[in-house]
Image (cartoon, rainbow, N blue to C red; front, side, top):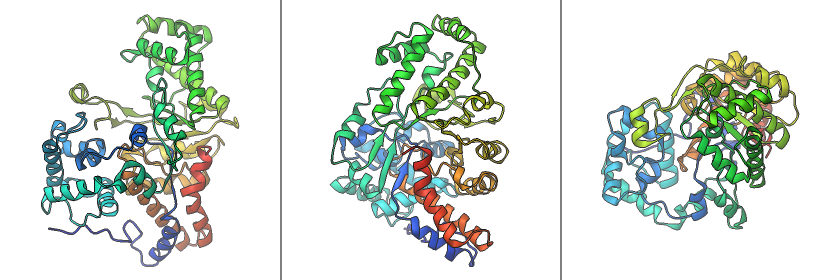
Amino acid sequence: MATLRLDPDRLLPPDAAVRPIARRLYEAVRDRPIISPHGHVDPAMLRDDAPFTDPAALFIQPDHYVTRILHAHGVPLDRLGVGEGPLPERRAREVWRTFCAHWPAFRGTPVQYWLASELHDSFGVTERPGTGDPDALYDHIAQRLAEDAYRPRALLRRFGIRFLATTDDPADDLAAHAALAADPRVDARIVPTFRPDRYLEPARPGWPDAVRRLGAAAGTDTGHYAGYVAALEERRRYFAAHGAVSADHGHADAAAEPMTPAEAARVYAAALAGEATAAEATALRRHMVLEMARMSCDDGLVMTVHPGVYRNHHPATHRAFGPDTGHDIPVAAEFTRALRPLLERYGTHPGLHLVLFTVDPAVYAREIAPLAGFYPSVYAGAPWWFLDNPAAIRAFQAAVTEIAGFGRLSGFIDDTRAFCSIPARHDMARRLDAGFLAGLVAEHRLDEDEALDTIEGLVSDQPAKVFKL
């Protein structure tokens, strides 16, 4: 049996002249409250506060970071309980044994860092998975999960999460959020995020039915274009009234191009009838992204944009297990030309905050940092998804701050469905920020008091400013 040991200096610079500075900076922010303005935790979990059922349901089933790596190593997703919901204990133990047996598959990935932090810091695990009895490890965690201290709300408090944004369908009644907001026992601020992608994509199967549901939720007739726009505006107001601070957009590209009202109405009617061409459907979606920016200027919701992902790359997996199961793959992204019509109209509007995320690291220095370095509305979104790893974060820090400065960064976002990974992810970001800033101090580019002020801002002030908290 090998010991699961977390070095207190993990991820800090190895240089003996730099590491003590990084330690001091990290210690200053290590225990600061977590602000999580972009993620995918189910709010019903926190509303209901039911105990987590088993280790597999907590660490494996909901986390496509974990399951995609195991799938790449030959483990079918059905052996991991993906898409199954609660598992009987026998099946849950089988999933856990499979996970432990494949622990070496995570070496060198941030997933291992997060999982090790979760197991060690949150559950007191001192045994490296796969080196001892997996059933004994399962029992150790299951015993913790049976305690009140490991229920969702207790963990929310222990993790120090003070702000948590979920991701929600515009037609959702937000009942879970309303219940959480009304419950005085919930200390954290838990808010929805308006995610309208499915309603802006006329080419998607089922789009006419989707916009009808949107209209029903808004009390608006979406049988015509003006009613469709009004329904989106009404649902945004509804989300804002329930605490939402942002609207999230993840299309194939970042393009935002205007159509005349008459042309938009014509294409919308054709799309409802199933007669719009692929080019027309794309044009309407790009026009509606521009409309979303206009609405953000009006209602104040922060606009986050993350294009450049080929969704559901493996059709058979999508058919069997649905979306968000590990086979979305990055593609090249372009922002400068794509966003010019939007920024020409709204780039200096005082009501717009536009946060640009990417999974294409080539655009950080070439496009995102220069855009954030000119337009007061634009912020460089932290590395996320395929780029939320130490190497990519370090490259981002150098590429973006050299051009735009620290004040144009979003602050860290965890973008996770795996609840227990939130503190581990934020801890990783704080260590990497401390290391980067310590290097600037060692190079005499910053005084240490400036570095301290900067890291405190990145953890607390910057996300609060960018997301209008």
